[in-house]
Length: 245
Image (cartoon, rainbow, N blue to C red; front, side):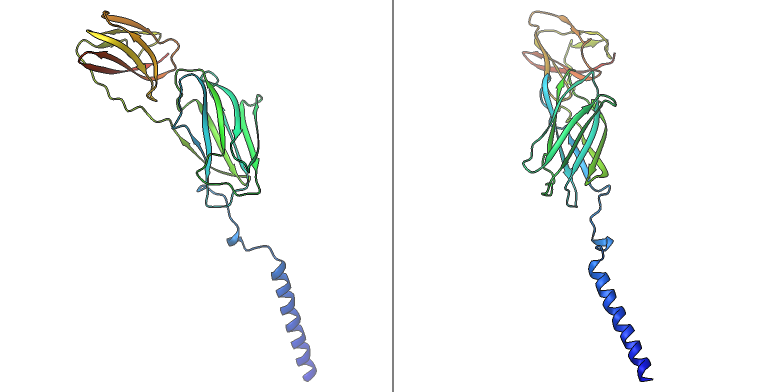
């Protein structure tokens, strides 16, 4: 009887020691592992685009509740509106590589770091030459983002619309509207005319003092909404015109 008891005690302690050894060498429990999901995002911020010609740049940042050690993204763009320049890594701790692949017309950026990436801070700038009069929501598309090598959500912040409201004054008219290649603008006692895009940027101006009408060439304008503004000695008039080729 004593012999059987000793054997049982030996088996019990042996199994307990083996269990402790296995526990110490096992991988961390799944609940302790950080997971990239839809709450983690790569952010493309187009809200502050400036300039109607020359270079523009789109800041890229991340938002994640996890520690992020690699950031990758890809996108396509409208070749009629933009000319790709380069993607610049603006951090001191991120090692990045970018390229434009002609096979599938896609810009790709991949990076890694030993230091966790900072949230809500610009990590890279995508630089383009703006070919169209204005940047619109269709200028870049097919956006994808990866954090720690895992597909995540993508947040696109669109351009901020201009804070202009239509203000029609006497004898101020535009036709045709929508416009294709040109519009005729009639006015009275006006001194200056300007065209403003949705970013609030003046893309054309003309001295019209002494005139009663003018024709505006819109053949080179990208499809979209523009504001025609005429200035008089008594104030300004603003009307919206839609360009559709």
